[in-house]
Amino acid sequence: MELRNCVALVTGANRGIGEAFVRVLLAERGAAKVYAGSRDAAAALHLEREFPGRCVAIELDVTDPAEVAAAAERCGDVGLLVNNAGLFTNELLIGAADMSHARAEMEVNFFGPLAMTRAFAPVLKRNGGGCVLNVLSAAAIVALPNMGGYSPSKSAARMLSTSSRAELAPQGTHVAALIVGSVETRMAAHVQGAKEKPEDIARAGLRAAERNIDELDTDRMAVEVRASLQLDPKGLEKRLAKMLYATSISTGR
Image (cartoon, rainbow, N blue to C red; front, side, top):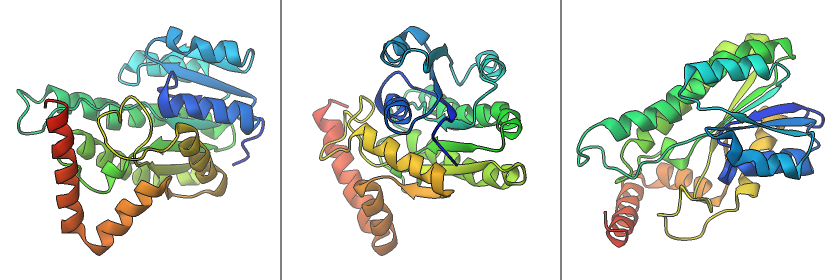
């Protein structure tokens, strides 16, 4: 996909990796326009001010069918869809009081990208095919203990990427899954150790769009997790459990 002069829509664009995608697309890759989707459009207005005439903040809750449909109607010129919006509730699967947190994570992390892809597939087709980038996590390829419904929801989104890639290939739409490690964002504030810059994740992800890469490990941690999964899966599971258990103790969970 040619990114220069493209029109993109990024969900969860008001901060973190989503905001980085907006900045990299407009400041570095020469995109013509980026719709910055957020549950509260006002939260992304700083991007409109930074890129006047090229960034458009829109209200978009990916779990709201009416807002998803309205976005597809309004943003009819989109050629790149970045499904970035995500949710981590920091609750356990078995130890939580009920299943509401796990359901919420599945709604945002799996059904959200599914709804957006379904809504924008006809838009992408009309505009020549384009690309869908699903921003996932190393949690999609290995279960992260003590992170509740997050790993299952991201794993489901990984399978969604594979299935929708096959369905949309005949119309010329590529679907890429981005496997992301630890990044300096609010969502990963509980994780200890070195973290990547959101802008570097965005740059890596956009390469997947340009080169038709199906699944891309965007950073060192993602690469190391995949390698460890092949070499010593049980050892990796134990190390992650130990690391995240220590984190949960330090945060009082």
